[in-house]
Length: 416
Image (cartoon, rainbow, N blue to C red; front, side, top):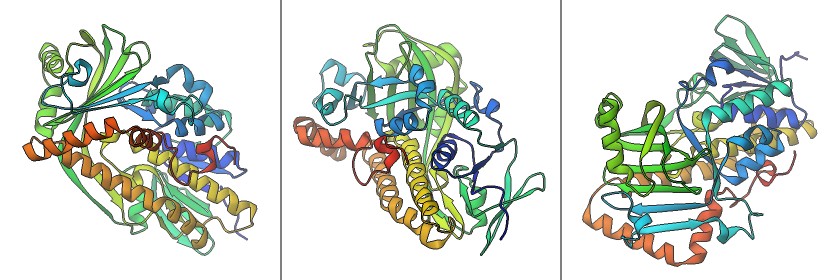
């Protein structure tokens, strides 16, 4: 019998990959992480300027895996979400437009154990908390190091690293992101397209309290989101055409601030930009398959989506929870972790959810990122109707919180 270096080798020690490693270790498996970037580089303020909306079910998973204590001080509760369709921002806050939708956490408190609609956390703080928890759990991390090649046979998967070393395990997992090397090595294609848009991301300090309210304005050029952070800050995700986004990122600070305030509105007072400005091209990427012989895909390696609904990372965390549960059950049943029958259980569990969500987000982008009068009328009627139907509002809140469907145990706050 071949001696393996680990039970599961995970290429990619980002947020989804590290979460999977913690989940596997909690169930008695031996994971090993490989990443081109050491944890120290991932924690730098210039590495990732984004913040993520974390569903309360995803946060339950982190609590169960021991990362919750480190994350709590940096997690801003989202108590309300205001969605507005208009040519200028601020309509929902001023009550000047009927085309808005309000979600309030108090409406679902009886079924969510008092959880908020979600949490807003800066990605660098998530990475810091997960790296601390991974280190504390004694999970080996090989970095900086890339996985350059994958070979599989009946005995396992062999990964060749950039320094020439070869590691083996019954199963390899790609959590490498959209440009996954292992996915390509396994011959898994991807379907996708660009939107001709980029997200301009900045963190701001606000004059007036945000009170845990997240705002999303659907403007003709694309959504403009004000996402509350701790210390009365907010993460702005400002969608524009790629050419305009690049021009904005290179503008003089006073010119950028003037453009920003025209979109931001005045209801939260003046804002001060803190930290660098980032630009991220927006596109859709969907893997044709989530598994191949002795390989599973999670996170952006399987599905990179538009941030319009703030669910991209949550889909990856749900992948991690589902794959970990399948593998831990396989271990306890004495099965081969990388066998086709085991991997198909994971693929079957996650396939429908990932495809339907990716297509739904794509539809939202096309419906809302335009100024067509007929579409504007239709979506205005739709927003107003949902706003008046309490059961519909509650369904969307539970869906966004990750509480709908066949949930893995970790997302229910239960240990493996």
